[in-house]
Every structure is written in C-alpha cells, then in structure tokens.
Length: 66
Image 1 (cartoon, one colour):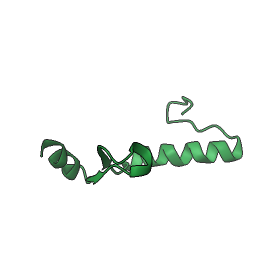
Image 2 (cartoon, helix red, strand yellow):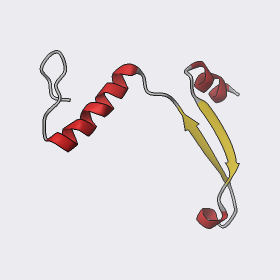
Image 3 (cartoon, one colour):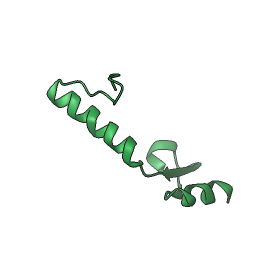
Image 4 (cartoon, one colour):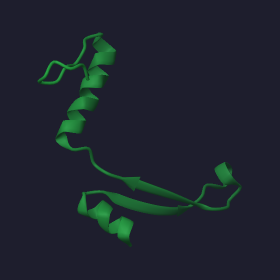
C-alpha cells in the first residue's frame, strides 16, 4: 500500500501479475512499476537520442556535456 501511494502521488502506476510460465515455469509474480519522466528528464532522453542519431553533443546551461 505504501509503494502504491508513492507511485500514484507521482503520477505513476503499479501492476501485479502472475509470472509468465515461459519465463519462470509458472511460479512467482511479476511486478511492473511505471513513473512518468519529468520535463527535464524527458529533454535529456530526447537529447541523448538525438546525439546518437546526429553525432552532436548536448550540453546544459553550464556547458557541461550531458
């Protein structure tokens, strides 16, 4: 209940499923927790994707390479 509350307070979700039989032989459980990226983190992810594709380097306001 504590984890669910923290995730929901931050706009995230939690899911609980039986573990896939293929992966574990049908024993255990699979937990999926999802948290949205904030605007700054999303920009960094987009920047790193662009960097991979273009060969350019992304820098922050101080000039440090991201």
